[in-house]
Image 1 (cartoon, rainbow over the protein chains, first blue to last red):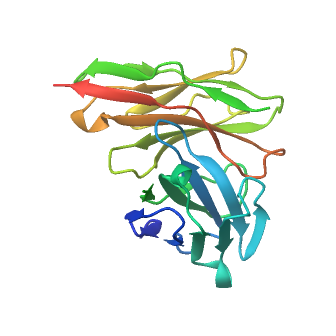
Image 2: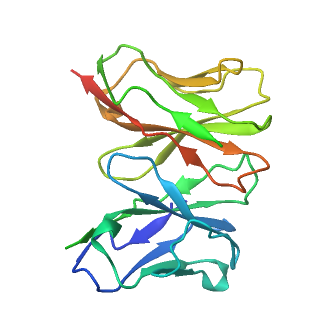
Length: 115
Length: 116
């Protein structure tokens, strides 16, 4: 079974440019998460989707970040415009449902560098 | 508020020996789950083991076991017979069953280095 797929793996952009990250969750997983991982720290949740609905986006900086999950499968996270402080790893994860015991499986992440 | 604390920024272990990675947590909820993930240099977070707060037995998965002490709010990961491939960052994480809506709260991580 294929795992969570993310692309690109690496992205280098200049500040004020837009950038987008793509995630394809494990087949059949209804819940999708985007996490932000700063260097030397654990991941922090940005947004959680249950099917197409964003059910927790309280940590998403909505002035510059946006996300969508059309048709309840793939998801895209966008930053516009990017700032120097956005340099980090963006991790996508998925789980069958949002039940507390459901394990979240992570993709390899996208490492963003903003110059 | 929930919090996960991993007090060991880095650990060394000799190949084939056992190692314990510490994790303490804080929550006011009675129902929660504890997870350990491994993150090699490639970046992917790999799920290792899960312990529910009501589970009476300590969880085990192959060479991984979780030393769960509920009264002390600790959930230490024990890796037996360390291998060179175990060198990675290890993260402890927690999820409240009712209050956090599925969000995992992670600790700062412990970097494990296995020496040949």
